[in-house]
Image (tube, rainbow, N blue to C red):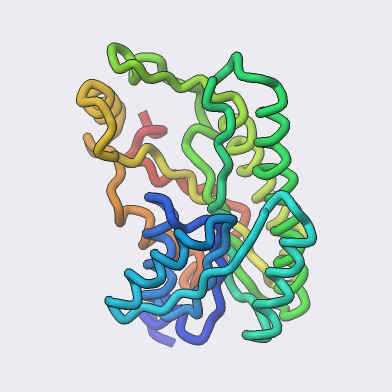
Length: 261
């Protein structure tokens, strides 16, 4: 196998949770362009169907599926459906995230519990369900989409004079936990040749970001910019493919050097 061929996902089956957001769309595109039979699952199936229709116009096929990550029966039903259709699951990308704490640090504690149920317990249930399938096949790659906010604390200076803030305790809690959960899963499934790695992206620029926030955030990065709509694609394919076959238990910041300063 040539080095370029090792990046191919042709013939492999990939599942990504979420998929309709700014991060998810580029991950879905990357997996599909690399040749994987790409399943995309979330509670919002209409949004996924709209995404699939758009990709179909470009000659890319993706398969939308229903998933409530906080419901173990929904998790197991998704697993069984894909295995029945494709026999196995070679790649899992844990990308879905619930953000119920819109009120920030002083929001109702029940919203924190809701966040943990989906983003922590749900992550565990899904990873275990798909990881056990991979273990039975003695092969697989699990990629957790974390955040550089799981590596560092909030930077108030980024939000000065913007009307924004970064005080979302649930997000920092579960993204930080995801990094160490990655190491646990890598160790647990390692003997079955199932790998698990984490990508921790930095901030993605959107049209609704205030100019002051973009300027202040950019100054904190080595590359002088926020992430765009394709910056995750290469790293996802790398970790999903055989090109990274001896890499497991790692966390890779994809943040333009934000955490390097």
